[in-house]
Length: 145
Image 1 (tube, rainbow, N blue to C red):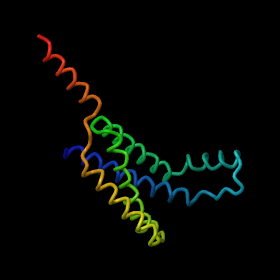
Image 2 (image 1 turned 180 degrees about the vertical axis):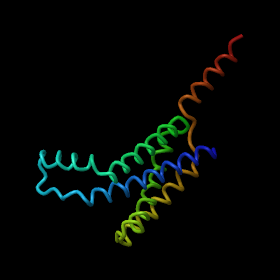
Image 3 (image 1 turned 60 degrees about the vertical axis):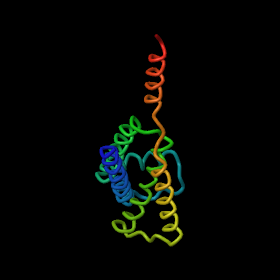
Image 4 (image 1 turned 30 degrees about the vertical axis):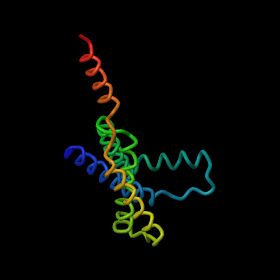
């Protein structure tokens, strides 16, 4: 369980760090108005050469790798809602690192996200499909003479 929590925390930290790098990098990309296909491709081309954006993508990839590892350990109905804690970390990072104004309504949403994550976390998680199948096979084997 401790390893699971460690991987989860590392993943959430990489997700939020990645979002900050992506935002900082995108702040250097010109705004696209009106949005056309050619302008969208131009933004992608510019973004693909921006170091902060590439670092943000790398951090998001690490988060995704952590998520894949965690999916082998927990049900998605348990795991995915917990990733909402990333909203909390990202909001705090936006306020501190990017100096974004976070309204009281947004902070209320952050608090609700934390309450939801706490409810999900306290519920435990159901056995994974793999564990349930393994137990079913074991039970069948014990029934046969």
